[in-house]
Amino acid sequence: MKLFCFETSLWLPRSPAGVFPFFADANNLQAITPDWLDFQVLTRQVTLRTGALIDYRLRVHGIPLRWRTLISVWEPPVRFVDEQVRGPYRLWHHEHIFEPADGGTLCQDKVRYAMWGGRLVNRLFVRRDVERIFAHRQRCLRRHFPPGVDPLGPDPRPAPGPA
Image (cartoon, rainbow, N blue to C red; front, side, top):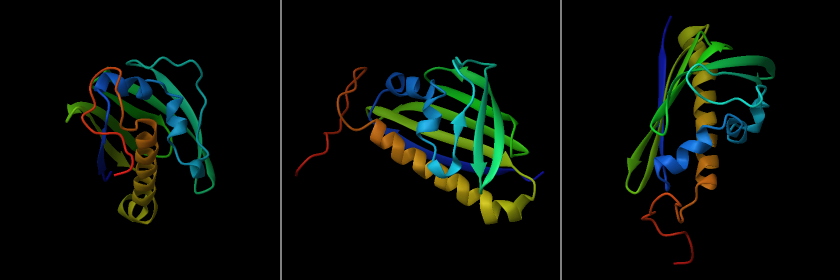
């Protein structure tokens, strides 16, 4: 089984304690997922913790799929890991890391994945989709956490405005 890695990071103008609660609500995942995936969280009233299972429904290239993830690591407000239990991948291991940086938080995503079809399917479909999904997430997160006052700590960057 060929493993692939995808990593990305985003600086947000809030402390880890100010950012982490957004990620601790599984329903927020739906808000930062592109519409073209027709993504829906099926599990209601889920409390994220080690061992939590979350079920989703989505469409990938028009094909309806179900996805179940397990929260295998839960260390608020530092990191958590979700792993696919059932879904379209042979392996999906997604580590979310939140580190204090420059008066805000460096949010890192480290994904290891494998799929049927290996390199060819990754090159033709999967890698491009993963990149698009995470680019969309970053745009949504920037809008959700604009520069300004962090109730849990100072923000060294000025709010956007006329020069």
